[in-house]
Image (tube, rainbow, N blue to C red):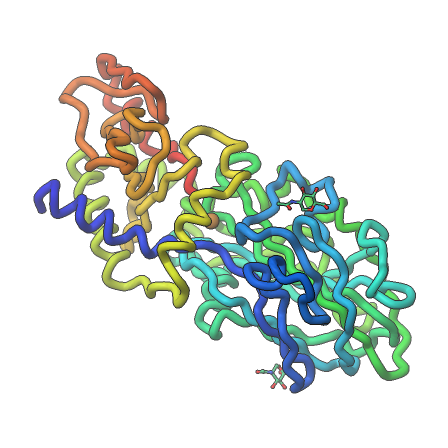
Length: 417
Ligand SMILES: *[C@@H]1O[C@H](CO)[C@@H](O)[C@H](O)[C@H]1NC(C)=O
Ligand SMILES: *[C@@H]1O[C@H](CO)[C@@H](O)[C@H](O)[C@H]1NC(C)=O
Ligand SMILES: [Cu+2]
């Protein structure tokens, strides 16, 4: 395959990495309610009254781990309670439907309830204590990065159907529903939380009042399910947050454990993966990159929304700027190889870049440059030399030490958007 062909494939794959989403509609026990359409309602002087909470996250952006101890994590940035609430019976169901979701933003989908102790319409969100009622995490890790609850959500028309525990006491509750995207979570502060809240009125005459956790205490940036490298095979994935509450207190402890740790069938150890990578040749790595590009272009579905604007929004995430320069505007087209024996993720960048003329050294053995606002094609460094991995103004080339060392650097990946 020629370099220009590869470049074309890389560029055409950009549309696969679309922007983020929000919950656009909610169905509660068979009745449909509108979500807070942040890209519309935020700009209206008289938006409709909703069960959904409003936010000012008009960039469709996310809350970063560095914001876990701020009110932003509770119901998204600049959030205010919905004026209405939807009645739901204990044991009833709530289907949350997102407007879209990017296929590469893999991660868990988690839902909590918190009692408002009165109307939720004017509740102080900082006082809400959330208990987890539903969670999906890593479903299958046969092909790294695995099949996640987000993939299931996309398959189900961007929706997840949540059952309200059958023993919950009546009253007004906030339902906090959240996707945590882990595609960059191998970096500290690299996870992306997308919380969405609605108000419910639980009916009936049940009695359970599960204890909960304040929103600002739900997560830590070092939680094993937050700071995690999904681009390596995982033997287990621990869903973040407090344990799952299920109806009937006796069952709680056991089911929480089961739900928290998803044991995957392909329990390849990290040691085995590393060994395989070290024995690969640079040529093999190059070849597997090409395969990945082809694979992701032909098989990944294109998200249903306006890709161009979504991409721009995603690239403009203000919080992306908080971390390494590599995050600013880059798109990594590195869907790991389908073959399971060796998958050192090789992060070729494509699409827009903001630091003109900057260099990107990919794992010591290949480099690219930001030219006319886009990453150019990846080229290998000369035999016997390595570059210093990362994005910088100058490309630093030095003599390769040992082959093993330079290949090891392949295991270090750049951060993704
Ligand atoms: C969103 O609301 C918060 C809290 O009111 C405010 O601090 C922030 O500046 C707002 N952001 C935008 C983009 O309007
Ligand atoms: C959600 O799940 C419940 C319980 O399994 C089911 O009765 C209901 O029909 C589902 N709702 C949708 C919209 O699929
Ligand atoms: Cu994103």
